[in-house]
Length: 244
Ligand SMILES: C[S@@+](CC[C@H](N)C(=O)[O-])C[C@H]1O[C@@H](n2cnc3c(N)ncnc32)[C@H](O)[C@@H]1O
Image (spheres, rainbow, N blue to C red):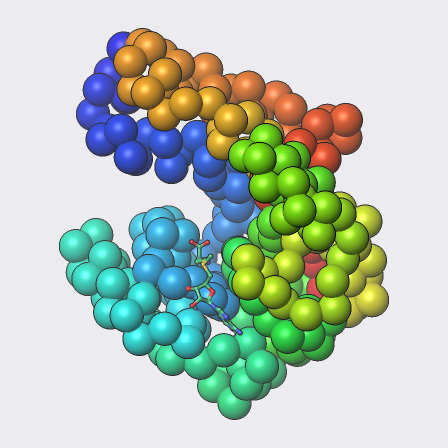
């Protein structure tokens, strides 16, 4: 097993296979220290690591429990001076974040749960400085249909085939075309689109734990297919980097 894998816990190795593509995109965006807003940043899985790169990160999330976990994680990682957590949500973002005050917004796994995705993206556009960047990560519909069907939940799979007007229990799913149209309508110019977790959710965790080098090989495979359009419908998530 490579030394890098021996030093990580199995849960960390699995998380790395799920987020490697997003981190590769983010590293290009976060090249010089700036003001980053992580809307719906939850317990800080991304925010704390971004602060570790030298950025000032503000996390807005409706969950007080998540914000408490964020504080602990930031303390443990020695970046508490660069991470602030505040209770709030996308619908009232402009009440707590001044317009045109942020260089980069992370919106990862959140658009699925808002009442009005178009209005949410317009609000994000307002808090970004001109030329600012949005990192948008959303659940992808086609992969969700396949996952439901493979689990034997055929009625759920069928219900997911088409967009629904409401949020629903499991949140919304988006196709690549839907998400890029939403972004364009909100005044963003998509710069890159990557498929995320094309294979990572299909591989048994035990294989990654037992097979030496498997996690690293899976990360390399995920990176190799992330830009191939033919694999995009199989990706659990779509990551779009877009500029204002
Ligand atoms: C799936 S978690 C994603 C957490 C984090 N962004 C990540 O990628 O690890 C969804 C997060 O969105 C938050 N959330 C739900 N509705 C929201 C809203 N309307 N505005 C902002 N955040 C919201 C939840 O509290 C939760 O922390």
